[in-house]
Image (tube, rainbow, N blue to C red; front, side):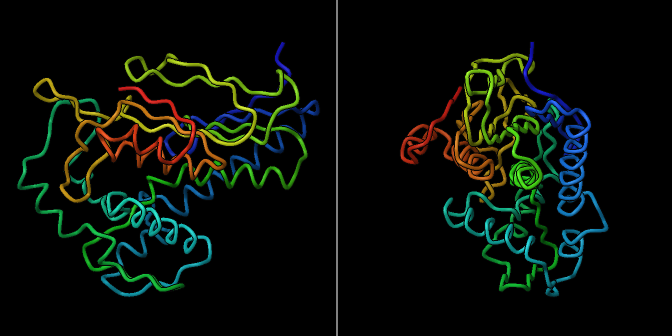
Length: 287
């Protein structure tokens, strides 16, 4: 018999699960609602699909500066750090490439001219970021899709820990964070998705505390001419990273950090393993 309470909701185009060691069902439902509300708040605030948030304001402000709040500033600082640490390979201005790339499991790829036409609209080096003012050249866009879900996991867990001393685990579409477990031998059992069979696990992990994040092409890819194209794009060429692993899972203290390292590993292509070894983190990689 399970010694935890389980709840579900949906946010950021992902199934979100909430596991808690809680005997009071009324309290558990209250905490689940708090988790969902915080996830939905973050989704609304940072989604590129909304025309009522600060991201839309920045992307449509025709090169004029936008004053942002502390939360947005925090993510912009993190995005700049990611860009610097990755030598420009992790770039939140590269979202414009979705205009020509649709990783829906189909077979259609864009022509080289269409991709090349978008490259002048990519490059963090072109933005002007001086807290609290952010200026984006006209025609460029920012997109927090590469870090938003992991950030939401960390923020929701932090919010819940302010309300309860209970042990929790959050799983937002495979991005996970936990403050531990009392039962179940002190660990949660987590399956790593098999990229060849996305509804099955390729490995079972035990996590006692901290975060896991997975990046890969199990659900977002193209097949063209017998070649599989993963969804992680090189912002300097506009094309999918060559020889990237099928899946990378990284363990780290926070989900944001784990997600950053998993994505960085994919961006390293053939050198993903050596990059991860250099970070001295636990990881699980499948090619």
